[in-house]
Image (cartoon, rainbow, N blue to C red):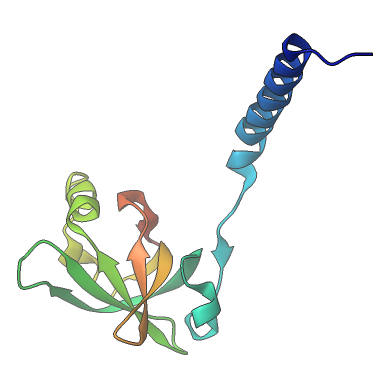
Length: 132
């Protein structure tokens, strides 16, 4: 059997469609890894994770566009960075960032390193939720 350009294009198209359909089906089932703050390490940089803890401190950047929240789970703490667009999403739901202080929350964010310290960058405005 001779493989012509026409057959090769059809095979490539079918394979691509199968891959796209597979992504659509399996993407909603991919869950973010839940970790304790003391388990976060440099090997997790650029990985999206979920942590639970209490917001013990809320500070605003000097430019008043970003927020720095300290999340403490009783074993360790980590800095959570909320940039302007995520803050706008949160405030668009009639929530004030300051209202999260002393509340237990679930955070989904990406692990980063800044000045040799590990931090979490909030994934989206929906990624910071108060839990009971």
